[in-house]
Length: 432
Image 1 (cartoon, one colour):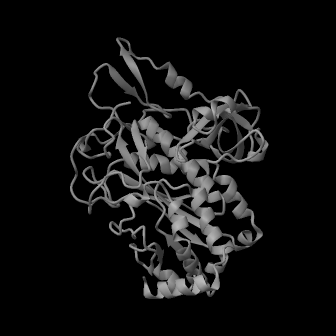
Image 2 (cartoon, one colour):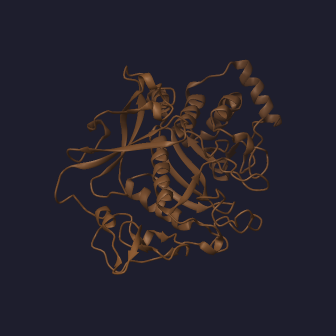
Image 3 (cartoon, rainbow, N blue to C red):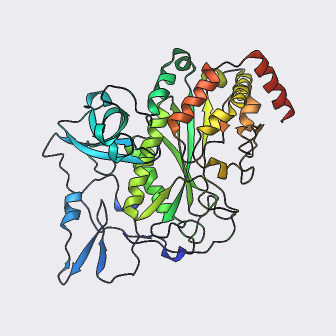
């Protein structure tokens, strides 16, 4: 699809004249990304997608678009299930489709499947079969109808989780009776950056150049301040349609950067919802001809990085006297700072510099309403004496299964020695 090269190439909204298809992603959510680069290319709008086609003397003929718009629900009970899993890098998402004989309501109704792990960096060529276990299902906003997206994790044929399967350990933590009784809530703020397809430079930035300094872009509006709103809005609605617990979205500090929030979600559900939301965003940017980046510091210099701030609370934190429970959790987190940092995303050292609303990666800190601390506690939590904490350390490319599992493990299951606890309490009191 066409590349977006400069602010002047902002997406232009195109409305369809009529449509009889009730596909969830309508043209009102989409924008054209066509530049005047080839007079032979044209875009035809529909209620579903815009597909490029050659223009003939008699007009644009687009049989592919008609098939994409085809609603098969009246003709068959069969559905399409898109099996989604995490690839060998730990951040790449893979998927493939299969036909299921009838609509399903739970992941347990779906069959296991397999894939070639040697092609994803997850198995050797001589023993490449990896088994997919369906774990969570969502409505498919791309195909509509009863079709579904299926979040899976991966195992060997012997039933052992492969090394890149981080969901398995997280599920064990969240199934522990002590963790279950604390009903852990998570609210995850996923930041991401949109890049121009061929030059890998942020959306709306002059190619090889820079926009004006940060300041007007955060939650801004206008062609010179907001770049990629159509993608953000399309993603928002697609997630709501899918059943993802998305709670909001906003433009971020660096131009071309956005954020969406998911939660509050309980336990393992938080990771499932974030991964599915990331997959939907990948598909939308694919159709728009824009590249999605989860790099924690996409542009070096005086620009904000991209994080995945994780808001967290337990039942004890949310009840009367919860602030003391939060303080104890922060103490535990301080003692395991290195373990958390090592698991909070690759390249995070480029982001956690102590600048641009971050704490230093080498020093644990916490504070009330302090966005430059490792852990932030809100004013309302302090005032009410109960509530939640915000872990501001995770990078935008973090694995939500790892981060949520670690938070629950460190604050609920793990107990430090009395000596370590006393020393940590002293350090935190002195803020050293």
